[in-house]
Image (tube, one colour):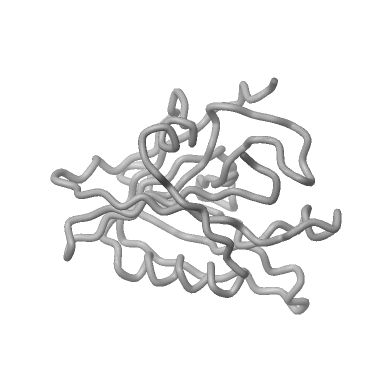
Length: 180
């Protein structure tokens, strides 16, 4: 088992998002979310909206999304920091989360709508540098899938949107074909 790379946690507001653009629609498979995360400034979060690896290997390219809604009282502080672990197993043991298949366009809409309504975003993922700004990717389960044999535990990525009007959060968990 691998997975020793650092997991990071980002919290930010002033959210914006855009769908990846490409002349060939088959190459579009991300929504990019930008947030202001405190002293570090702007952080980009790259979220898969389909799996090109699964598509190329002949498997289902759709992403399965589980949403866990919960109330919130206090907002977390903005920032960008290493995080010890994040595992979908913890949530699946304590809640009855259902994972629904999403076509790419439907998942794009779900993410864009959530960004437009949320006052804050919390994200877990692997860090990368994108231009002059820090960012996160691997915003999904890291367990082995139909097209990826590597099984990484405790390094899952996720998004938690905070909504001020309804005082609730939506925690988005993302899985690909074949992930438990």
